[in-house]
Length: 379
Image (cartoon, rainbow, N blue to C red; front, side, top):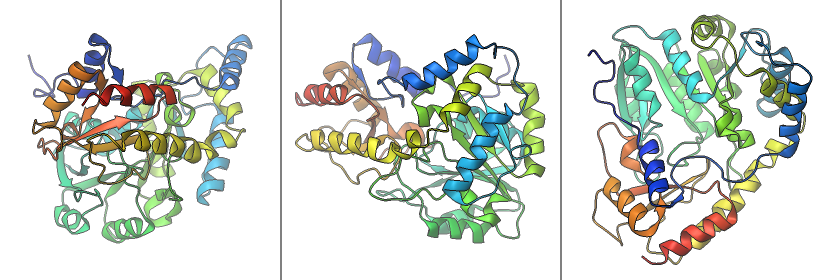
């Protein structure tokens, strides 16, 4: 049978979550919270259902939601967005990335991917008949190797995928990074796919540098966001894409034939909930407290912390003091023997590069983090 992805099996996220369930392990592998979402948001969605908002929404998303998002973007990034022509509501961030790539890619195009990278990027590119050009981030801080990026650009480069705050490393791009990207893509036809799903989760005073802050980048970018990461509703699969009108038109051509529209009562509820600005403005302090708690709990365990995560809700740790196993084998052993599941970082590298690091998700209840580290004390 013909396969567009002949070498692809089940993702490491599914494998580790299944292993965690099998061994009754605490699941710090997949990136989802285990604490409740806002009861107010649930109330708003329930109210929308009760009030009859249960049929198809407009293909682009309900106007009330797109309008409140334009105000949010303007307040945070000083960027004027047209709600009618520049925002499309999507069933999740991953969907938005796939749709953006599908809108622009043709057979043989090249897309630069900075690795380690969220695992959907490369497979989305391959599915569209294009070629991923993987450029390694600089170990151990995983900052961008701009010389390597420049060398990777060719006449076939159609797009560069960026991700800040970064999954899995937690690196947060600086304004200098954005200015360099701007200079590299100036006077080219290169698109930017900017994955900004962790936009509100930055630590130690770091500011999220959205491409929307930079007019020259904005005019060539698809910018992807996730309500799941903002409102702790990953299972709802709701997000949105922002892009200038001429390329958003191409995005919508694909979108209308992939899913056409998204969950109506959730859109209505989220439009109302977004008026509570503090729900997302308090996320840096909320998650920094969890990061700091988790790092404190790890401090007397034999893991190596090369760098405190600057953003996202993941922390990478080294295990060189514990084992010489490859990272995937170590993650499996840790799950089976000690009941705590993680993700091996080599899973984010197409070439399998193994820096002997694993990723923990700390978007969990405090008691979950405490119980996990209690189990790890047996190391």
